[in-house]
Image (cartoon, rainbow, N blue to C red; front, side):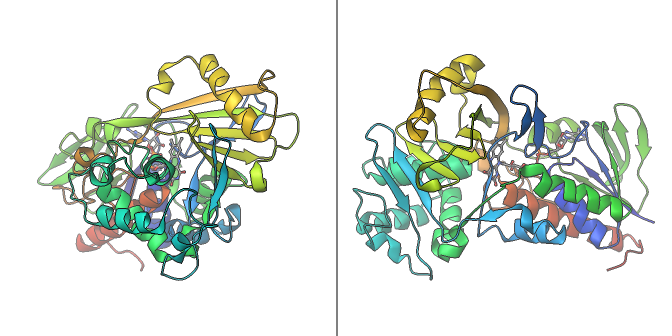
Length: 428
Ligand SMILES: Cc1cc2nc3c(=O)[nH]c(=O)nc-3n(C[C@H](O)[C@H](O)[C@H](O)COP(=O)(O)OP(=O)(O)OC[C@H]3O[C@@H](n4cnc5c(N)ncnc54)[C@H](O)[C@@H]3O)c2cc1C
């Protein structure tokens, strides 16, 4: 029976493998390290003595494919919806707080309501700037398309760029940001609802997928790093791992679901972004359950080093996106720098810093600039039985969980088509 070999057990690889297993295909997953999840995983931290996520992750109501993935795995209960959609913010220099609250229905009437929009902004600005973003060219950055004059630059576009594109607005692709606006704000309140992982990333996205694969006779091999591929007559013929060489059957297909730098090492012919951006996460363990203003599960900060604070029980977790400069500092210096900010928000003493943990994800996503977006690869390749998946492939979406899941689903359907075309017998 034909086999699809999926390389990489991050979200893209798991979405691909579970879709294939559901279709009755024979699947083997190969993962370089000893655990699955890649850039979205939970682990037990010895310093804080509890399970934490490598970084705060948020989904939005518009992320239909991710919700389909969770539903397929019976894991929909593992994410929590904030209903109605509300985005709390605080300006750390003035102390002013507000909530952005999109309305139901397709017409964004929230921009006409002072209680729902950002203080100090006018409805006309939203309309004018959204129109400019819509008209942006592929080569435009957000700063280039919108300028910095409007208050919306620092209070709306910059936080959105950092959160969705992990790229500063001064260099982020305006076209890609427009996709985010179109898929969320222009689809109404439900599409904007934040969904968060109240029990952690792995219990929602990773463990159920591994369980599903095992239950469907798919094999997952850990500590199996692919080093290279051999091909002949436009077909991959063998895969070379650190420990062994495996022949690829004539009817088999391969999906490379690895980050762009790994893909480049394995398959140098692939087009791939070459520049990455860092996300820094700081976790602080409080003595007792912590709470944020409005008892919200997260809050965005303006005029601060910290971009977002999330709370889960007694752990406060801070996110700093596009944090390459910050990541150059030693961990203790980062913890000391950020603690007074979070202390101000939760009303704690700035002098008494609790136990902390800093995690620097150096290659959190590719830099989503106009130039790097152009370097995204398509799912199919010049090799008939080789397909690519990953948040960096050309999904039309930012490098996110939703982009990863969509890329995995697409690679699964193309790999299935390829093995069926080569005469293999696969149930529908
Ligand atoms: C701190 C942080 C915060 C984020 N926040 C959000 C958020 O709020 N919302 C959101 O939607 N997204 C967020 N993201 C992005 C999201 O995590 C990624 O888009 C997604 O996890 C990428 O999944 P992937 O499967 O494409 O790649 P990866 O997770 O990188 O998976 C690739 C896998 O391939 C394996 N591998 C690599 N090379 C080889 C090889 N040669 N052989 C075998 N295996 C190999 C790796 O070990 C890894 O397990 C965030 C990312 C980070 C790091």
